[in-house]
Length: 541
Image (cartoon, rainbow, N blue to C red; front, side):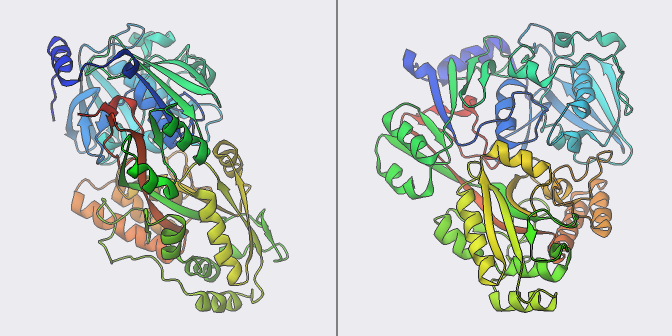
């Protein structure tokens, strides 16, 4: 697990590993399919935000392209007792303001996370189980929990570390407390990250500017402790419309784009000046239903009742969706139909064929609606982003047409991701399409965030905007989260997943297969987490 770094040697190896680049090649221009909502590493647990922060604010633990854990700011870790983990931190690391990195920065970061104002999705999902943090020495940290916490190293890979000293903290008096680390603890506001004044990290890049709707400028961190990034400057442009994003790549205005539209993949592959790479992701596209509000805001024709509280209606909506048709006709085959919230082969998912996608059966769906008291259906609107996931609005439109065929008059309400998420978080939708990438690489991630009963103290249900609640499933999930034995934990996660799917708690649609397109002179290894990480984009060999 240990990965020692010798700065002088690292620099020498870098010089031989990266081909000499002309000046223009030191600049990388990326077309983003969806832009971050903030440069604050703790404001919004959202894919575009998380991929940006990894360039600037590093985690204690890293992950490779297959989501396997790797050393980062911690060189190694091991259980210190049944309910604690010891992290051995890397020495010789400094933040971009020159302040040294040590264990107090980790404590300060965990102290700040619960109090980020107006956060639409807090990282307390990953820190809520911490009951104590003990600084043994500046580079040895012991983290305690009330119960066995097998996922602690994994969850320390999900959030970035910020500097205590850069934010005016006297670390000699800093102590962690689950009740808060002191009312007078100075913490930066989200705007301070967006304007760059608080953007002090240990990562391979420095944030030069963050302008919503205009672009993000990164420059190489000259004092980075590890392997230097291949690019002196990176410009990340929000090109959320497919056509302009592809046109910018072909014209050479950008070198690299996310999510090239599926209909253009063959054309891009045929161009000898370009390269396309793709890989299956950990992201499931799903429809969440409103389980709680009566009346539900976007349902009509029910005299105020919320039909989504009836399991027969939820089953009808689930089996009315022809997933294979969506994969073939909307996703161009670059997706896999989903039966649960993670694809087979990932930790806690069922083996292939053990929990398959629900079969399309419109006739039974109509019978279920009649049995539930809605023989003539009702009206509903599906909320969806139109620039966040691959063909998101088109997929929502296809589902709307399928639901309409069984008598449920369905419309879609599509908007940009920033608008959509704000409205979703205000519970404006009765049904909405969204996606979830398992940041931890195992089933506990979507179950805990999307389906566990909302409980901020336990870090559960942080993105459960359908307000689903099943105490029996919660109990199995919580038991899994306390089980260190991997085989036993995986069995419990499968049990919890099957309970949720049998209750039609959510409607999984498909797992995304993620493509990237770029100039032929550069290359990128596909990542299961779908992140576009400029420091991993390399000149082609």
